[in-house]
Length: 400
Picture 1 (cartoon, rainbow, N blue to C red):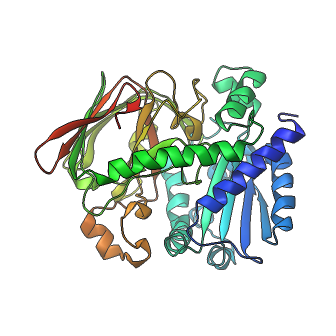
Picture 2 (picture 1 turned 30 degrees about the vertical axis):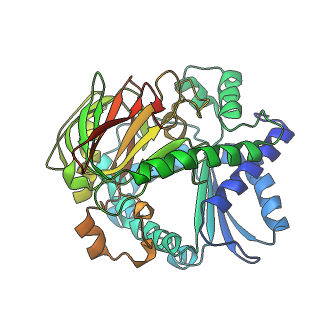
């Protein structure tokens, strides 16, 4: 067993805290919660299922297919099969009140050699389901959270033993504490003060500088910083979805990335007038090029994020974006995501936002959302609308 029974129980409690925190509205008895899990995480899904029933909620369980099934799907499917959405899926997503996803991959590179355009077609065909839940989220009718469950493949790709890898997960999620939910509530309060400070600044642009990055990010109008909202376990980042049109310069991701069964290393992107005009990678460059060609919005920035190393206990590469984008280490990290924006970073009622309003404000729309992480020592300077400049982040710490 990867975790002890006590650790599984604590992990489930933290996920339920995350699910509650990630939704503006309250859960009521009879609400429908989708529990999706990869097969290695079944033991955690069973504990969650029991707890959800005890809360009077209606869990709907979906076990993911094996990596061989996924590879065969993209190898053998016709166009019609690639874009097929099962009957009832739209109705289910339109009724969901919550979703918990337990990520436990048995392979990270099984889709190498598959044309990324085929993967992109499937993502685009299912994007309307994400749009449904996003709209419900904006109205306070839906919340979601996700986590990662250790597997031998994750440990191998991270070059750690299973014991070392599991220890990192336990430490990162505070499962080594007597009451991990209390620890998450404490972090939630402490980070709230930093978010309030950031949201009080009238910022025209952020300038991110490190050895490999020299990038301007424009937050845009009516934006707010979010973070440690319960959506991800663990999560130590603070983020916003900027006005994509103001992105200029070079961004370098020194952390490798596993995405859609492919490995990409040392990605460097050059932005002009908000869009990627050049992308390079030490490994996986062809795949990276096709990812940002997935649709019109895939070349644009949908998220800008910073993690303060004082909160994150993650200090090893984990071969998993959820953990790597929350890396603490010596200098914390920043990451950007090319692709879809988060509309809840709008500082008003996101439920009232129309597509036309989002377009006008520079919120990006895409079937892609690809997080790319930089852990170099960096300085982030806020250029205020008053003309003043202040450093908001230095050596992995917010300067608040």
